Length: 266
Image (cartoon, rainbow, N blue to C red):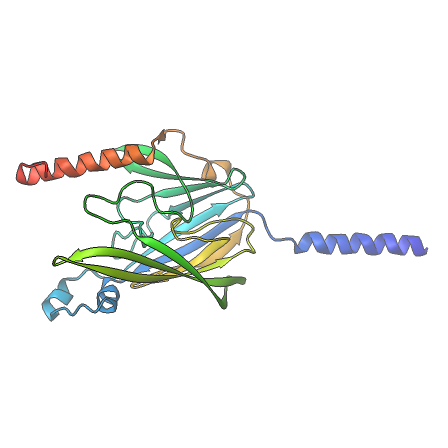
């Protein structure tokens, strides 16, 4: 009888432990807001009433992270755009809109984007600036990550604060000046995978919020469910491209734009 009781108790304990395990697949909805007026004010720029009236209004976009145990995809939700065309990627994420595909097992990140009506796939790395150049005359920023003791809850997950301090040198009226910006990241290790709405800004875990001047990206809800393979697999019609090849294409496009505007390559 005693042995039977031990067996029953062990089965109950095992059942409780299994039920307590975190879910392994689902979707996380992110909301990205961008307010150019706040950005302008934060940079100490004073605008006339006429200029302020012409400034674009704030924009709100929703992005969705779909994940399972091995893969994930991060894309803008169709029809979610309100008030502007900001792509939600914040620092170093400008330009064309991109989707991101994660392979947790192989620690790979692929970004997918359309350029000249062609879908390209390019391998990327989290927490690192792109290897490609930022453009003629532009200097690559330096990023320093500073971990703090601050924590807060997002969707029930304990998130830790990291300050990303970016520094870049610019020539302003012939004088070199160092410009520093700070971006706040909130990440959690409780989801069991690595992710960031902006892969450049990442140190560890899953980043659930990014805060900077005029920009706020935060996870708003999580829904555990089965995910279809086609939702997280790479597009079959994508063409692989390296960062150097992309730089060449973008540089050529810039030159063609200048040529059409003023008849000169320079």
